[in-house]
Length: 604
Image (cartoon, rainbow, N blue to C red):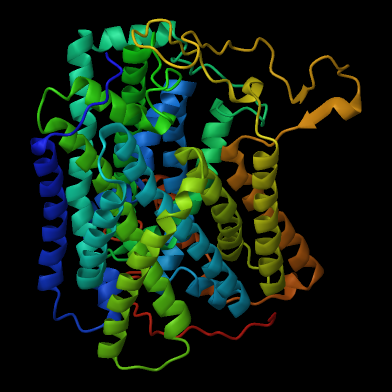
C-alpha cells in the first residue's frame, strides 16, 4: 500500500455513467408506460397493483442508503462484528409491523401515514406528526446525498457538487415523471448494483488474502469477533442488548410509521402480498448487513498494521471503504466505477423514496384537505411537488457537512424523530382508551425526551470506556505523516457508568460527569416516554370513556398469528385462502375516499 491517492480512469467513469443512465432509463420507461394514469392516487401509490417481490426489493433498497454502504463496514472495522446482532432486530421489527400496523393501514387504504393520526386523535396531532416527518426526511436525505459525494471526492478526486447534482437530478426526474411505480422498479435494479459493488470488494479481498479463513483469523486476533458481550449497561455503545433492543425500536419506527415504507407495502395488490413483501425484505436486509460485516472485517485484515485514518490518508472513517477499493481494485479498470456506482445507487434509491414520500404527505395532508381540484390538476401538482422536493434535497445536502460521523448522525436523527411517532402509533392501534389529549401530549414529551438526550450526547459525548473502539495501529505504514505512526486504543478492563477528572477523588460528586446512553437507545427513550405519558394523560382526562371506530384499532382477527394459532388448535392441516387476510374486502377494494366516522367523544 502506498500513501499516493488513486484516481478514477475513463473506464470507471463509463461504468458509473452507465449505471446512472440505466436507473434513469428504467424510471423513464415506467413514466412512459404510466403516462395515461389519471389520478394523483395512482401516481403516489402505483395504483395498488404492485407485487410482493418488487415491493420487498424496494423496501430493502430504499433504506440501504449510501450511509449503509460506506459507514457500516467502517463501524465493524472500529467496533467489531457485534454490529451483526442488528439482524435479530430486523426480524422482530418486521413481525411487529406485520402484525400490528400493516392490517390497520392497509384496511384504511391511506396515502399518508399521518391521515391515521387525525382519524384516531386530532388534526393537531396529524400536523405535528407531519412536521416531524419532514424534519427527519429532509435532514436524512441531505446527509445521504452529501456524504458519499464528499467521501468519493476526497478519496478519488471525483467532483463533489457534480456527484451531488447528478444524483439529485436523475432521481428527481424519474420521481416527477413516473411516480411510485418508477421508484419501485428502479429500486429493483439499484439493489442488484449495490450487491454487485459489495461483492466486487469482498471477492477481491478474499482472493488477495488467500481465503476467507485468513480474514476471519486476522479479525479474531484483532478482537473484531466480539459477539460475546451481554453487558446491560445502557451507556455502552454496542452490546447485544443495545443492538437488539435499540435496533428493534428503530426498525419498528421505520417500517411501522415512516411514510415511504408504509406507502410501499400499502401499494401492494393484496394484504398477502404486503405481508410477503415485508418478510422477503428481511432477507434483503440480512444479506446487506452480512455484506457490511464481511467488508468491515476485510478492511481490518488489510489495514491492521497501518490504519489509513490515523495515518492521515483519509479524513474520516467513512472514507475507509472507498480507500480500500482504490487500493485493491485500481488495476481492474471499471471495477472501482462499479463500486462507486453502487454507492450512488444506494443514494438514488433513498433520495427517490424520500422525494416520493414527501410529495405524498404534502398532497394528502396539506393540499387535498384544503383545496378541491380536478384529478388532472392534482396529478400535475403531485409531479411538481416531486420536482420541488428534489431541489430542496440538494439544498439540504449543504447542511449535512455539519453532522459528523454519518451512521451515528442518521441513527440519532431517526431516533429523535422515529421514537415518539412509534409510541404514538402503537398507542393508537393497540390502546382504545388513549384519547387525543394523551396522544398529543405523549408525542410532544417523547420528542422533547429524544431531543434532550441528543443534546446531552453533543455536550458530553460518551468516553472511550463506553464506546470501546478496538485497537488500531500505524506501526506498519511505509509513508510519512505529520502525526505519530503508532496509535492504539487499549480495551478498558472495567466498564464505568461515569468518568472523572484525572487526579480527583471519585467520591467527589463535583468531579462526576454523566454521559448519554448509547445512540441506539435514543429511539427507545422517545418511544417509551411517548407511551407512558400518553397513557397517563388519557387516563386522567377520561380516556376510559373513549369510543373509537373499530376499523382504526387492531383486532385479533387481523393478525397472522391468530389464524396460525387457530389452525393449529383446530387441527386443520389443509391450506385456506384467507389466512393472514382477515377480511377479503379489506385493503383490496378499499378506496381512500371511503369515509370513516370522524366523530370522537374527545377532541383537543
